Image (cartoon, rainbow over all chains, first blue to last red; front, side, top):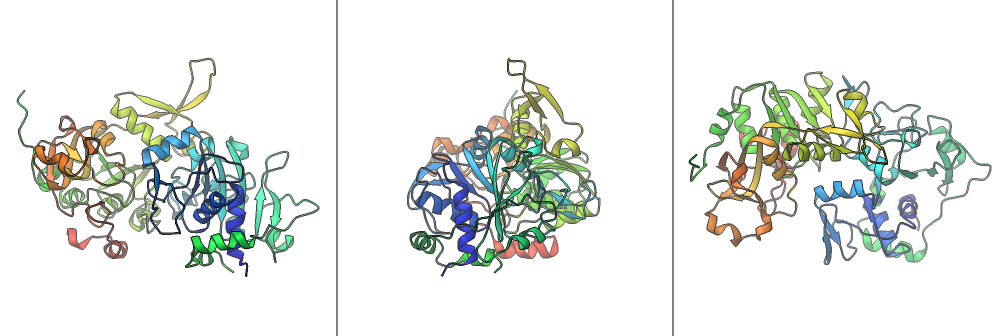
Length: 240
Length: 263
C-alpha cells in the first residue's frame, strides 16, 4: 500500500527530473536522501549521489549502508567548491519559508538576541544564490509558512535566487511558476484538499483553478523504495 | 635561526601561550575531529574574551559555557547527530556573546584569504541574504572586468592562534590525517600566526608514510609552533579511522555542558 511518505519521497525525487549528470544532494533525514537515490535508479540515471559524508557512490546503497562501489571523493572543501560551480541540485530544509521562498534556519526572533538560536545560516545563502534548490518540509503549518522570515538564510525569488525549483511538504507540492515568482500550489497529495493546504499556509498562496493530485509511485518505484529503505525510516519523518 | 628539532609540548603549555582577547581558530567540522584536549586545556586556563573562529561544534559550546568567549565567528554550531548545540544556543539567547555569522562557503573564502595573505576574496555566496544585514561591516566589490558583477568581499579570517587535531604527527610538527576528510585544518594552520597540533600518536618522521600516502601529510612543520601527543584528544567527536564519535558521551555533554572525561 502506498503511504504518504512514499508519495513525499517520489515528489522529492521528481524535483531532480531532467538534472542530468550533477550531484543530487539530499540534506538531512531519510526522505530527501531516498528521493535522490530513487531518481537515480529510475528516470534520472546520470545523477551523482553521495553517502552523506564525503564519498560519491558508484552504486546506490540502502539508507545507512556504505557503498560497495565508490566513484569519487567529495570532502567538505570540494562540496563548497561544487556549490559555487553550480553543478548540484540541493534539497534543503527550512524552519521558516515565505511566499517568495526566502527561508530561515538561523534563529527565531531578533537576530541580535534570538528567542531561539537554531543552526546558523550554514550553506543556505550560497546554495540558493548559486545552485538549483528545492525544499522538503515535513510539517506544513502556518508556523513554518510565514509572511516574513526572521533571518533570510536561503534567498528567494525576490532576492536573486539562482533557480528555486519546488517545495515539497507532507501535504502538497508547491512551485514558483507565477509572474512575480511567488509560491503556487502545484499539486495536493492524495487525500489532501486544497482547503487543507491553504489553511496550513500563513500567507496568500496562488491556487490555480485546477489543482492536480500528486503522482503516486508505480509498483516498480515502490519496490525500489522498499529495497532502499527496508526499515521504513521515511514513515517516521512524515506525520501521517 | 635555529629550528628546534622537537616542538613537543603539553596541552597546558599550549594554553599558557594564549592571552585574553586573542582570536583563536579551531579546526575540524561540527562534531568531527575537534581538538578537544587542547580546548580542555584552554578551559582550565585563565584566558577569556576570546574570539573563536570555527566550523562550530562542542568546542564552541564548551568555551561559551565556560564564559571564555567574547565573539563567535561561524557559519553554524552543531553536534551533527544532535543538530542544535545547547550551550551555544543558551549563550546566544542570553545575549552573552557576540556573533559574526557567515555562509559556509564565505567562511572558507575567509580562511583562504588569510592563508594567502590577501585582504579579502570575492564570492557570490551571501549576496541577497541577511548575512550582509547582520554583519554591516561586510563590503561588496565590483568585478574590474567586463562583466562588472557585484560580489561579496569576504575579509580574511586572520587568527593569532589555530588549534587542530590530526591522526599522526612527528615531533617537528608534520601532521597527517588518515580519515576521509581533511576538513580545513591546513587552512587554519596557514591562516594563523601560530598553529598548535594535537595528534592521536606521535611517530618518527620516517614512519609517517607507513599508514598513509604522501597526500595525507596535510600540514607542514613550517606552519607549526607546537605538537601535543593526545590519544583520544578529539574527545567525544569523531576522529576516523582511530575512532568514531562517542554518541553516549556526546549525549551526556548535551545534558551538562561538560565532558567529564576531559575534566
